[in-house]
Length: 307
Image 1 (cartoon, helix red, strand yellow):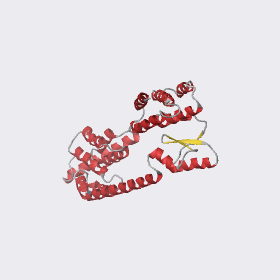
Image 2 (cartoon, rainbow, N blue to C red):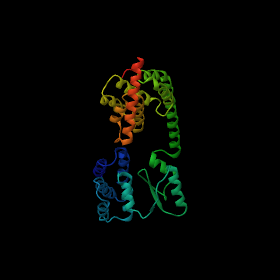
Image 3 (tube, rainbow, N blue to C red):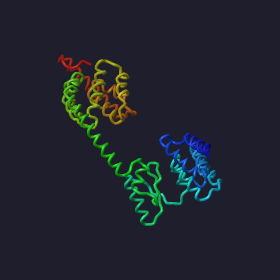
Image 4 (cartoon, rainbow, N blue to C red):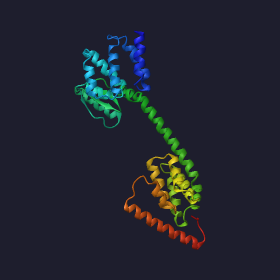
């Protein structure tokens, strides 16, 4: 029996998520002492292996039904598979006559819906974030333990701690950003036409307290400074790529450079995530003409940044 236990444990680890390996080992040792002496484990392992191969559910069910298990053993197998297989929820669906309700909203709301169904004598289940929750057996704490690994109280406490930590970090980032406002404004004035200085100053002050706390300001500046130095559009774009920003933040930076830098329209064409429309192309050409006129005025005045 000991050899079988170790074999079942090792077989399971081949296709069970590593985060569940300890639970799997405990499951095997417990089931091996049960009435079926591990026969349910042997069948469950065969099913999980088939599921891991992405075989159609019809083929998996055919294999399962040919095992001629008792109803109790079948229930044990289903229980093992839906807890440990990546396709366990689909296997559960194929082996239950219960009605499935759709999970919408927070976990608390889903559990309340299941408890309400139970109070009305209904036998239903739902799948929440890959976890099967059944009205007959669900409680708020059980559901939270299953889905999050914490009881409801511990989860709420952890969530509050994370919110407080996020707020603390946001305040720290905001403080750092505000301390750099004057620096960012002056650096920008060195590479942006004087007629746009007021736009840049307002941008810097607003974005220092925005959701990115000046990250967009710093990266936009680095790109505009590179363009001012005459670096290639590709090298300038690499500054953005290497910054590893979100798509939304990248779009803010690209737009900022396009609006404020004399080489902004050319940069926009290289950095845009989409095919430019005729309207986009017309706007970029108008921006180029505006930049040429500003350059002529700077040359006449003999002042301002040189591009």
